[in-house]
Image (tube, rainbow over all chains, first blue to last red; front, side, top):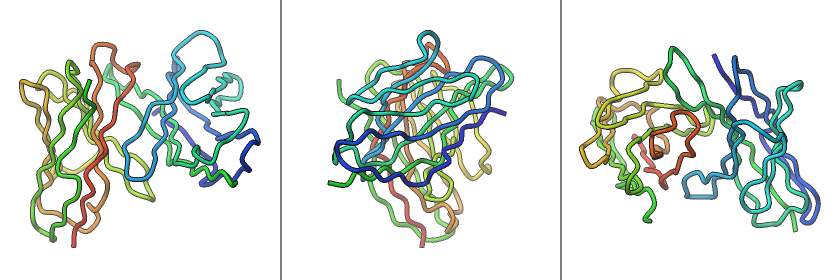
Length: 115
Length: 115
């Protein structure tokens, strides 16, 4: 079965510094990968996705993610963190089983950007 | 376009009761998925409905059920509530045509507390 892992429960970074939120995946076949962000008392918001093509995917709010097939990773990055980026981040992968599809989410990583 | 709406936003029930949650997708979206979010488990997929038919199902007991109406609005029902059902229930909609690669648009969630 397909799965994703977010190895860090929390990531702290100073405002203005680059940030990385890690995600590794395990899939058979082509990986379809997603990043979502959740602000307090809100649903998840889509940031970006990798379906095929360039390994570097650019998304909303200045975020980007690098797909690395050899390391089975899809880390989320931003060159310069803002305090407003503080939120809960989820990585997700498409799971295909017997011709049906669903999304498998990681357990989330809480990003705290310190002023 | 209006976003995904969920009602009610907050709900308090006691063990043994049943509850119905409602989700209205983005206009034109035909697929609605439901997730349970808890601090320890992250997002767990419950089921997905497309054109009034359950297309995918997660690993939840039969106490959890759903349905979709002809206008794509969906309801989720949990019978015989248990303390462990306390969670944030999220629904997400997609156009439904590109299974597994569509971007999901999430509602704000219904916070269910079981006493």
